[in-house]
Length: 336
Picture 1 (cartoon, rainbow, N blue to C red):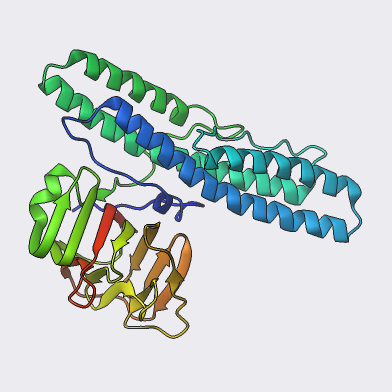
Picture 2 (picture 1 turned 180 degrees about the vertical axis):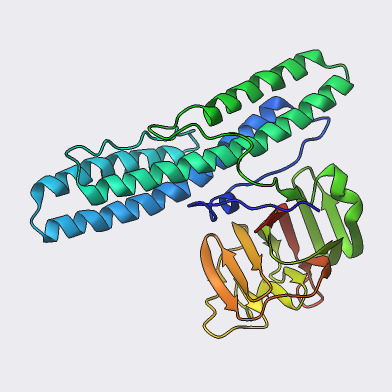
């Protein structure tokens, strides 16, 4: 099988983005709306980290009585805060140009370069995935003799390709085919035959799977480390979602709204959230260790990996103690 991976400074960033699959009744407009929302959300997370780093640098320059350097940092910080505000409003922010290093504070130019490179790689990966979605939709529209929709999809494909293959600031062009294997999307049409419902009520949509009640479903395909399991999670009712993979379980910690890895590990830090909040989950599975990340925060690390093959992944929307409702979306496997 093929597997996948994405990053926010190169690894973490793909975990920021929500990916779904195309269906015949979908429109190019719907895909592009999803693309813009996904991109804005991912960029906002990158800009938050960038502004935090700039604020730390500003504090350092102020303590050093470096007024010139502090003014440079303040100008860039104000620009970054404006971009962050626009990202939070759902606007599509372009990849910023790399900062010219002449007469610029070296730590500031280094921060700007890393920020631009992170976003450039993110756009390359994100656009690559949505180009694939649009190409799949285009084939469906052609099969249904919908030439107008097929042409509309081609125009969108050309636009996304142009951004990927153009220079992002002073960066060299980023190719479409040099980013590693594509993701395995577990909710794609070609993989839907691998799902087997065990109990409860399950509802499939193009990019989401919702379990209601005391519910359990299995994705049956043999996996072997190393790989990453990524998905978005939203608890709508109850508080007992579970994902079982090999000897490990991703789920609630006690009676609070908090995700952790079970069996509990020394030094684990449960990730707290609220009902109705969408969170991004990543389980890194190696043969020598296992790590759980939630919204780019490391929650737990187990010093044991999973060396043996894994036959299936079990998802639970709720259990007998708390028969709730949970939406799992953007479920994918990524190669390491």
